[in-house]
Length: 508
Image (tube, helix red, strand yellow):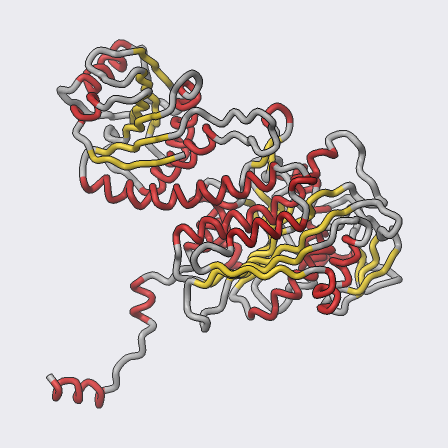
């Protein structure tokens, strides 16, 4: 979808020729002499329209309005959340039929915030996104163009900032959705590595892909164990976004890349097993985040690590009771082969140490227990570092991609004890999301670490089945929050000595 920003008077907005004009109306929309203001005031006065969030009023060829269709959409206090809901509802009312272009009028909003514009842009993408890759007769959305209009230069500045961030986020979200939605035979570890290599063509992104021989040389025995039951070769994908000097420690994102999960020998029930193509949504979110970074070019360094493989019940597959040795040297008794995500992530976490990271965040569709705990509203967030946890929580709020901090008490690790290895890979059903995080914590002791369990938020089932792209918005806001501000940069500059100051005055 193409986005454009225009600064137009209210009269020019009324004269703008387009398939549909979607007008966001706050509680106090103000007044004017133009047809749009008059129509809005009349609709409110007559009681036919309220500016409450989600309320709509549609008209066809309204007098004085050049647009074919007009939709008034209430936004209440014009918060980003309300704007997202209003745009989604408004586009839902006009996107069917022959609507190809929409003008989104933001002029009735007195004060425009960049986050509100970003919310509008992402809502447009959500309303128009259609998966077509494996369909013989692709039917993409007819809606191809959205023009955002504001009435003054001050609002235009905020709108431009929000538009730029929103467009970058949309590209990241749609990249993540595309790869998460693909069937497993169209998103093998090798094909996923190919998608990463495509990102490597973008500015400041470098990609390295390791195969079975390189992974074996590194000693990633836990990762290799999961992959040994399938004919598809594993891939370990390393992405680097270098937007700051090499001396700046990177943030490392680790994405679980199980491109299909049967459960292995501990096989899953047949019902809804097709949804296990979504078990690589953590990997897809890392790829999507890098796509957004390439668009925005922030001044920071980011590393992405994706251990990608299938989990299949072949003749060489790992068995319950097998003991494997991880890259860290710790031995693991595999009591349940369906708890494979933590087995690939633990080696990736050990690999992350070589980058001397400022923080490491792993993202995984890890446990059904997290779905039971939090449903599809918030992702589970576990962290050993309060500052990191707070930053992720703030990013979740600002991006409307919510998470919730979960406990990491040492008592939860009791069930991971075993007589036959250093640690077991499961600890029973009680507190399953927490014990999975406690397992990963053993491999993340040398850096600030957080784990996002996105099993409930990464995709939807039923009639709306498909990837959500989460938590790309959360990750992007978190990363952008790590970029030093101009003020902080200035405060870190070394102060000149009195002798140097005197020399400078002499030169002057």
